[in-house]
Image (cartoon, rainbow, N blue to C red; front, side, top):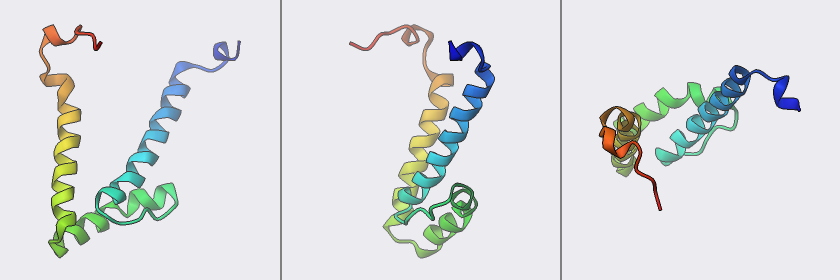
Length: 91
């Protein structure tokens, strides 16, 4: 079994890294622009893309606000959900 040789921390770190790369690419899509192509370049270009959307005032700013609201709800959902809903199964 290969899973015995790879510690869970390495798997979690790899999955977190993949998640950051996907987030950095999709953040540009949320702002109605194209991803740059490289992972670190996408990540470093996020502030400039946000400033561009804010300064232009076009519909990309509205989309940015909706996207950020969605991200905030997703992050806070675990803290705000009721304990009774924690064990509610989806059917």
